[in-house]
Amino acid sequence: MAKKEIKRHETQEIRAEMLGRIAKLEGPNYFTEAVNVPSDLAAAIITSRPELLRAVRPKALTVEECDALYKVLSTLIETNMALREHANEVAQMTKNMMGGFTTIQRVGEQIATFASFNQARDED
Image 1 (cartoon, rainbow, N blue to C red):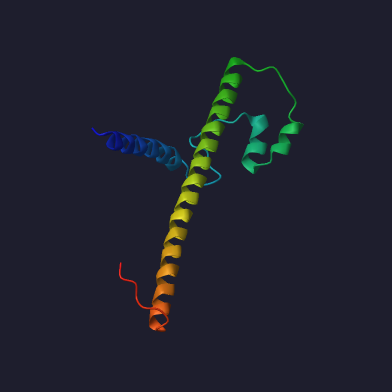
Image 2: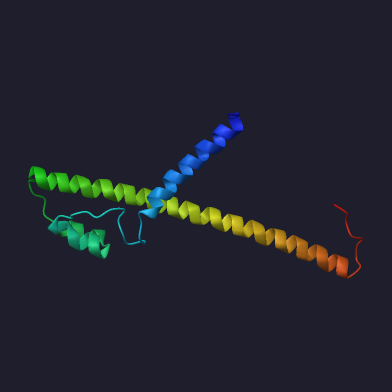
């Protein structure tokens, strides 16, 4: 395989992985996977109000509670990554769309110039 072909293949694999993470999101208020949230954290997470965590009193955790908390943190990090990738994809799509508008505008200006006999038509 040529270098250019390998790079394109690697880029496609990275994009597929990114889109796979994004595909796990059902919407902006969902996690990438279901998690069991400890009851004293549930209100803050469900309402998206981190200030509610200040009311939670620290306590000793059992191994199971610690495991559940680690799972929640892991899922939050993965969800954050997916949301960032989603935002980057939307930004790229917007740039592509704007590039199309710029091209349309340029062609429209060329047509208007040609239609008004202001300038001879450029031959490409």
